[in-house]
Length: 502
Ligand SMILES: *Cc1c(COP(=O)(O)O)cnc(C)c1O
Image (tube, rainbow, N blue to C red; front, side, top):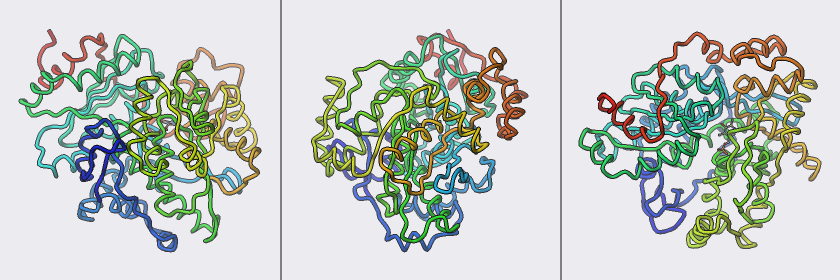
């Protein structure tokens, strides 16, 4: 299995190279040269297989040059060492006879990014070593919340890695900050920035391009790398649970052998729903992929019209992990939906960087619309969905999952398609206590600190606080640095060389 760039100038990469490089040298994203499909009967025969064995089988399809035993070991390190609080890893909650909420938040930081980020560190070290690399991998992350905590939890204690996370001080939720600054593994480093997320991100990008820094680190045995959601190694692990969910539905008799089902995904950078698209291409009987957005509805417009236009206002919403205008992983969809025309993808991406917008041709648009449907939920609709879901079903959802449920009901009204639908439940409601509490109990609980809100939410709803959040208030803060963006470079050198900051 070889990988190539969506922009076409680079071909013939191994999966180890794709994972180690992250981005292709021509600026494109890595995709497999062919997508390995299996006949449906072959998938169906796997019903009852363990999550770990299924993960191994799926990764094998994309990493054929690795021995099965090696992949099995990577999978074991990620999913079978107790990081997930639920024995099924990703349990499906039967909300209604034809709606199941896939709870992707039983990992250490209570959001779906734990699923890729528990596996990625092991994958990265393995890939890099298999290419003959000996340096310590240094992962630099700028985060507005979820990615930072999930990346820290994933890299914590992984041999051969150091992770350095920068977050805007005051720009994340209190719980997200606590999840980061209480991370005690010796290879984890966290600093707050006196600036906003864009400042942190701009500076991290600059550090990656800083040749003198790269050389100095290289001499001392360090290699800078990124763990962001365009890395193929982050996409692959997300395919697994869409397959495992299908097999579960089949085994329970909720789906029959000839049935198809839909998936709705609350989308930001488009990596998650793209994994569902790859699951379909692997041969699963998936009907529609429903792309749910918040007020930042660039994706809705794109899927409906074929025009991707970022020249619009950016909103901060109550579903912050979807507050994105440039969804990087769309580039992979463009490659596949355009009939693998890399020159077209390159043209659209050039237009995006020159004019902040592009328009795909009608054939590509139609191919996207054959599979995808899109809509968005306003802030009010999101709050109302949290409220009504709790009222009718005694089931508590976070704002991102609520966006998905709201868009699903719009989809059903618009199309009449009532097929069984899997809703990607991307975060625990306890991760977004202020919003969730406000939704179910409009009066009261304002001005309460977020740790007390955990207890109030539990009392009000009778639902359990996830174990990792329950223990959070008692963990000591171990990362207290707050620095100016201009000091980030020094900070990297300081933590790696253990020198005094000048
Ligand atoms: C990251 C994230 C999303 C969006 O996923 P993408 O792969 O960026 O589309 C949705 N919900 C939550 C809670 C997230 O953390």
